[in-house]
Length: 366
Image (cartoon, rainbow, N blue to C red; front, side, top):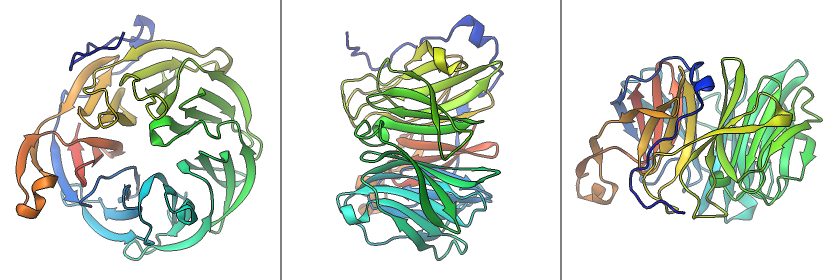
């Protein structure tokens, strides 16, 4: 039965798992600083050595920011190739930091695909190479003794692995199974932990690959209990736990929840809990970003803002502050006492970076 209460109780993880979780959030997350990046909503964030790549997702633009001094973040430059009607995308830095890999989908099919952006001079980012695709929704990079790789989760081509050689993408593997199973960030996620690749889609749930050989990943196990989106995989004591957001691209009636899966044995994946504490049940009120730090899972949500979980219990919220009302911006930026809508969250040392649907990037204490 669908829940209608605006505030839902939180279901705790099992006692065995709880005993392995260390202390974490203090309960009060506060804004340290912020910088307006766009008049429209922001998307994914990636951080490397004091530089943040932030997606202006509706504009198809990648902004580069200096976040070395968290109290004074500032924009360095932007990659803007003139695309219009961008739908969404994802970002990843190359190992050496020379490139930002930008996977994008837009209604301009000729502008879809994977853009390798040279950010050697972050004030003047430039396209280095381009690989077409059919709806590039998730991307990450991976390096081992054999070289550097880019892993793409695409709505048309499925799971694609490229070798990255001097900023050029060379395809070395393709698994079409996830194709047409993802419809955007609302139904897709990827992470590599150790030698395993974890892939979530809106229709196939979770798949675990042996990624020892990136040119030939092998499926070790799967969980198909329901469609999943953003995923964060961590080692908790002796266990490996996947925290995944429920998808809403294919079924907008799905609840805002975090599904907790024990993936220690890929051939025997078990659901151990469901966490839910989020406002709203429509497409505009959804859980988008997850990150783990210090035994705490931080969840970015468009209505509930930033929420911190430990052992299934809410242990922190981003406190309300004086945030610009986007609709009143042309009238001199009206202010309201409310927490900003959060789309993605990433670690920045002892702090957090939060991308907001109000177009601002927030630095937050935890």
